[in-house]
Length: 331
Image 1: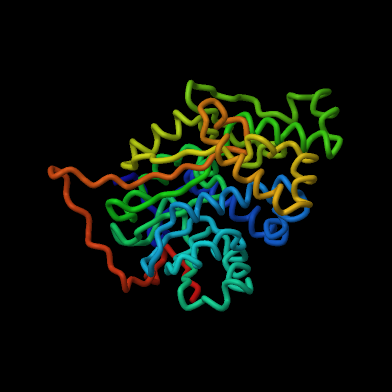
Image 2: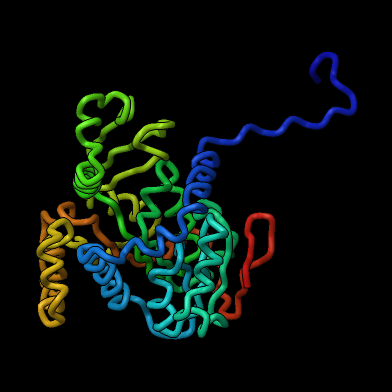
């Protein structure tokens, strides 16, 4: 017992962890960017290309039927209509309440709202039972935003996905991030200022390893929050460690993701656009191109536990997300 205890004083609050501070920064930033996220894929043909490639990959692997599917980080609902079109019942989990409300207002979703539940929660702390979902979808570089908690995020996704269930997620590659940064900096006339004073705009320390690059948070600089970039080998290693078996990988826009003129011309002719999508899917699976596009997308299967491990709970098809302190549920 400490000396001279203060009687009647309230217990001291635990200081917020680094992970919770990072999640709060992400939530606060995305709370104010609902309209921007809704328009992210409009206007530019190469952005539409990347979106449609994700959609086609999702349609290829998403199982048909009425089972529960978890969508982590849906934002304003770019891919939710595709998941609902498979007949699934969807639980959309996001940190941002404004994003979840915008998701519920989308016309393609309102007609199927009986098969949608919206839950505010963190991907590293999912308020669901083991083996609840037959598939988990995490598009939008959710793994990268988890930064040092990436292993915890994948572990949670493995816990709530039934054995034999599907996981589809996309990953931002270092090459794609660098290209995106240079193009956006040049477009906003920021590149010259960055080159004049790189110590201010870039981060003080970048720790590199063989399989990923970790960016620590730096206030008032280019990096607003921590972010991890994965190579294909690093992503596969992380998935295997969490209990998933990768079955397919595809680069997103290896041909036209950053060739705006090419994609703009192709967009004007439906047949040419379809041919470009098919070409992207073929090229995107070739070795050596997974880091040349706008990141890559991975499909993986939840491995069945070995007989020595404790079996997971049976999935409940009539499951509804619980109302708890950990989750804010929107009907």
